[in-house]
Amino acid sequence: GQSLEQPSEVTAVEGAIVQINCTYQTSGFYGLSWYQQHDGGAPTFLSYNALDGLEETGRFSSFLSRSDSYGYLLLQELQMKDSASYFCAAYNTNAGKSTFGDGTTLTVKP
Amino acid sequence: ETGVTQTPRHLVMGMTNKKSLKCEQHLGHNAMYWYKQSAKKPLELMFVYNFKEQTENNSVPSRFSPECPNSSHLFLHLHTLQPEDSALYLCASSSRTDSYEQYFGPGTRLTVT
Image (cartoon, rainbow over all chains, first blue to last red; front, side):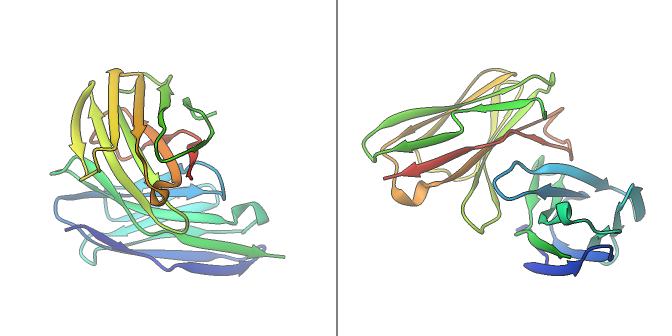
């Protein structure tokens, strides 16, 4: 089967750095995506890692370690608007689909 | 603007009603998806269409019936739903089924009374 684990909630203050971890157990793993979803809104794609290492996109970075079946999303210089749910999703080549984690609710405080 | 639109945005229906959700993508994608998102729960994949052909039915009850007349349009026909079917129904598209990057519509908030 497919399963992903990520923390249910994370709280941080404005301007800080936060890391949201994701561990996965999935056959046919091809890569790990991250999505952001504001309350009442649609998920939006943030980043994707197919290879080990760090991918940087502005204030957001994503990391993958295939050997550890682990990845994380790093958010720097947190802003209030970053308060949202963040989902990791493992793409499975055998099934041709992505399986989403339960999501991490990030609350940014002043 | 994500390029994926859904109508209606909100829907309230009784258990004996029949209604349809519509999704349209303007991105030239050839894969489309239906997801269910219940309160405080993860995204649950329901159906996948690739080039108008259904390639995934994730054990969805028959009271949900998808239709994909072309690569740009996707429907979800609803009948005799249950209160536990109340959720946010999200449509998404991607360039192909093996795409890691899906574009989501704003969703339809469905309430079954």
